[in-house]
Length: 133
Image 1 (tube, rainbow, N blue to C red):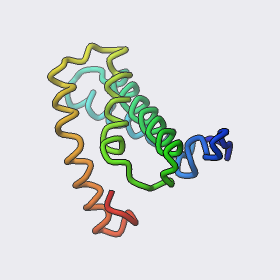
Image 2 (tube, rainbow, N blue to C red):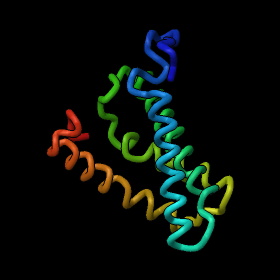
Image 3 (cartoon, rainbow, N blue to C red):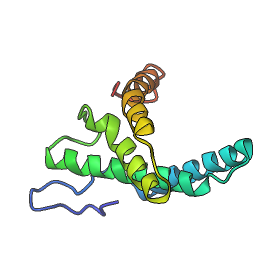
């Protein structure tokens, strides 16, 4: 996504792992989940799902930008940031279109890190990832 550009610190803006294909795919999957949820719950969730998926991907880009500034290679670990950058991005963008209660924010911040860790360990054990983080 950064077209190979580097900043004055010599590091890439986002790194090689951030692609337009991933960005578009992530937003599309979020919209599909929103469509399914809209059907199942008989309510329109498309705006919220678009905001959540886009916000999550923007949050992930912010995390990648921070990791490049800290000289952490793409795919390298940055605990806490790796588990929460996408959650914070999603919460922030969803809050633009729909109020988000403090309870929901706290639940998301408490539940996401262990789920993120366990799914990554599972993907590693299945050979889908080259590291467990």
